[in-house]
Length: 90
Image (tube, rainbow, N blue to C red; front, side, top):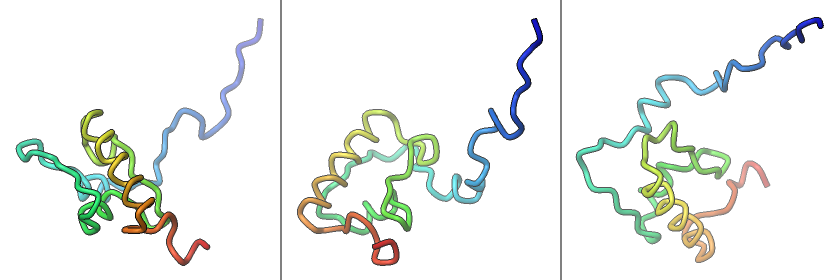
């Protein structure tokens, strides 16, 4: 049987995220992480310009911390502290 040819670009991962962005978003492991839904500045640090949350592999958060962040962002969006999407993408 003939082996299947892999399409170019498959399995490469998302190379569009630069190392500078990844290192910029990392959270130091020494500090305690607490997310308050009223702290707009801290929540916007983990949201990109489109309004999407930045994934764990880039932020460096643990699963528990990412879950707390997700709940805080969702609650802040519900209370209109932060927008669901930016004005550029409406």
